[in-house]
Image 1 (cartoon, one colour):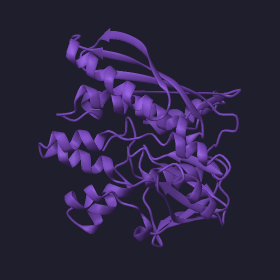
Image 2 (cartoon, one colour; image 1 turned 60 degrees about the vertical axis):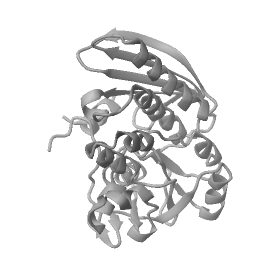
Image 3 (cartoon, one colour; image 1 turned 120 degrees about the vertical axis):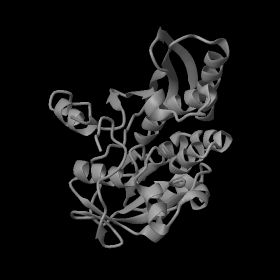
Image 4 (cartoon, rainbow, N blue to C red; image 1 turned 90 degrees about the vertical axis):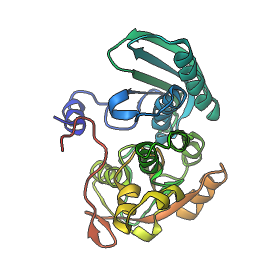
Length: 294
């Protein structure tokens, strides 16, 4: 059973499950777990790991249109090394500061491999769910796609400095807040654009039609992609870019609201009745899934 199958099973008994974060009254809360072998390539610094792990949870809050208040993390490793632990906390604190939140601590444990579990807490008076998209609306993304795909290629090539720089991202909390009055459905792109579109389609009972030439692709992708097909793979399927994918009835107003926060937003297509298409062809439901076997 992979992550999506497990979530589908749990959703039958957990009514708050199924979106990027749970919202109880106005309290938004989310948690994530990352492991050295599956999430942090060789060369990833502990500072980057702290930044990225906490940033992933902050991104979940952004996807709900929530304010971010604070974050905590479990730090587990075979041994506690002062420099590594301090670097992790520094990265976690720095990414929190970017979104006006505070890193307030967590827990320590020994484990056979470096592992971290993070929790972020915020507030969402009017949360944006995945289930509000309507045919005829525009579908948009914030920022650029393919950042993580480029980072993974850099790590694999031994360029850890470039890999670490690309791995550190700004959670789109400000953009998510700006979209409260504009977005009808939203989630983050941690599983990849293609999979995110399929998840939104399932939640909203709709479809999507996007165009390849509209996708905003990170310039670092062009330096590593071997072909146009590979470029599309990096942009749509690798995932973990932590951008926002959202639908809106008024794309001009939504894009302007996001741009006012200092982040770009791009209309990439429209909401349809069914199917998920790219340039008129089926877009495979393929991306990052925990527990998925090849």
